[in-house]
Length: 119
Image (cartoon, rainbow, N blue to C red; front, side, top):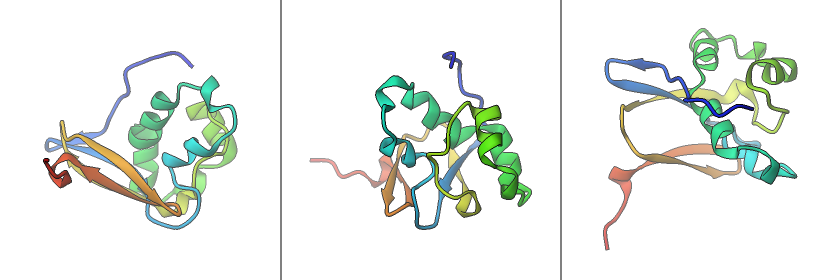
């Protein structure tokens, strides 16, 4: 997979971020569990899963059943190591917000820098 800048959906200064809100493997965090992940550009794959405009459009329009194994391979170049698509939700974050995705048994949560403590 070539290294390209990730395109994001931005509206009114906010960026669409996709996460899984149900139990299972996790959406972007599921990649951490696949064998031979050292052979993949894990960061780029995670960014595509978090921000891909085609995925955002599909989720917004309630068409997550379209995200099949074949669709993932054709559009994202990935195998099925992501969570169930019917649990996908869009979270809108202010552009430039630093965050990471936390996963507990497949339920993903966005943790932003405003949530950090300072020692």
